[in-house]
Length: 374
Image (tube, rainbow, N blue to C red):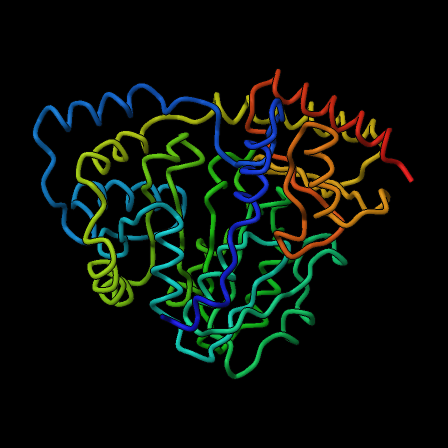
């Protein structure tokens, strides 16, 4: 057995979701899965692809037509790239796994600003590398050059940048990205940009993938899951220098062979489908949820993207694990402990649920807080 597997633990998000599923009547605000159906044009494109017999192996790197479409899409948004810069993956999870597995050797270090999605740590550990956590809670969930530079050693191989952030919804501002540029100038440190929530932002956001000077060190991990409500389709992509893609495609060929051909045809259509309506609904839900939390007296970093809020529950006198466990068993609503993201004293609330589910879940949270107050 691979000894590195002994360092891995189950997803806290799934653990608390499973606990909620096992609790009769419990409302879930745990999973970051859009409640919208995949838009009809995308589903129709998949159905047509199946009817046309697109059920055979796709190229390991993805179909030519999808990679050309992705390259055009990314170029239009400002990241100049060509089809040879694209690798089609099994969601952003596949993109992150391929990127980190492809660049890491045992003993390498990966800087992970926290709070952070636990997958980054899991993949790093699975490669025998070391996660180095950089706490952003004390700096308003933004990066500072001195703190980042203090984490960098001669073993640092990569920095993972997730913006908008899961679990806070915070967006790294230009000062944060400038800090990354200055701290890594003249190094060979890779900058892995997990931008899966960016298409759902209110407006264009600062983005290192648009920096021409960083082109040889930036790896973009992207997914169709969140913007187009395609979580079950399992498709995403990597955008990176062509020489790097040539290596990554060999790794992916050994792992999954290729993403299903008819799914790739549906993804081509997805890139032509606007997400404005879904983004507008998420904004309305965000305003409702944040308004309710403020009236409950809870503070949180103001979410600017994604579909999460990260309220501070330290005033309850409980750690986040105990709080979320009692919230399920006594309050009948499930959230995710901040400890699952490397940030104690907070919980994550997902607002990609229906208006009715959000109202009932928040009603139960408010009642629990009133009862559990120290």
